[in-house]
Length: 251
Image 1 (cartoon, rainbow, N blue to C red):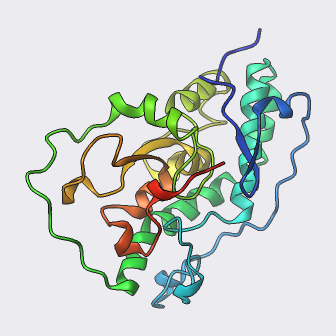
Image 2 (cartoon, rainbow, N blue to C red):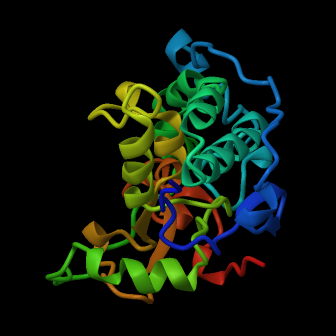
Image 3 (cartoon, rainbow, N blue to C red):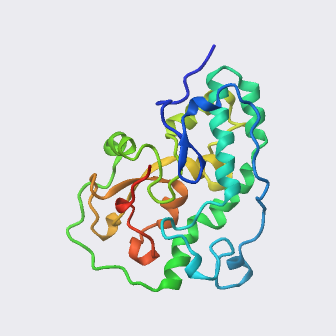
């Protein structure tokens, strides 16, 4: 029996660049090729250098949209997740497990842990822009759960920083429920959670950080993947040298 995994099967997945195809284009196509450009390595910051090896030393080459661009091997790997969800919905659980097992999951966890979540701090250290004066009083409301449905819909389930698709936490839980925790671990630490979860689960981000007086409302919240959210941390876009995502329109 088929199992409903996706909350909304109309949400697209990223194929290349800025073009998106509907989930249904993957039906019946079980072969997914993933660029093997991933690698496990120690970040240059951990080797005593002054820059992150993924971010690079030349700030002129840094992304103007995201704290740290996802490399091609990660964006290619998203196809594996998309197809696995569809296979699970079709009841082809062994095929879904096998497909996820072929993914560079551990490498994605390391990339998030060593590079993505630290990228904002590294960028700000190099740029040297001080935080703005705090707007007081702070918004009494910090939690944004009640606003998630309307903002996720507004942003078409895409991160407003890197532009890549994101999936609801519920989608990951549902998928784990049918294929098991061994195939899709959702632990409590970076290295015990699936790399797909770390890089593609949906959350909201305060563009002007709440700690600096940003409001918890639709004018200051945008859809965000975890890697961009943790990378941006409590910095402003000016402190990171990136474009305000509220000015960006994704097609």
